[in-house]
Length: 91
Image (cartoon, rainbow, N blue to C red; front, top):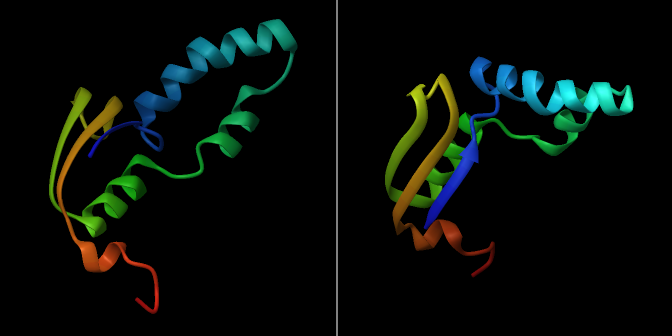
């Protein structure tokens, strides 16, 4: 599985949306875009990575930025699903 997620929860990600979409939204509508972001982005990139590591045995990560803590996006390549963890309860 391949997945790209925003680096939600990092300073660079927050700064990025605040000076682009957040600023435009405030100018255009007079409203706080951060309120929408708190409802749309409910998990941090770290939480998503933890979940991927639970379900897959081989995870590779690349970032668009300097490192995970200073990035805008993170790209994961996930291999080797742990099937026992993917089954629902009682199976």
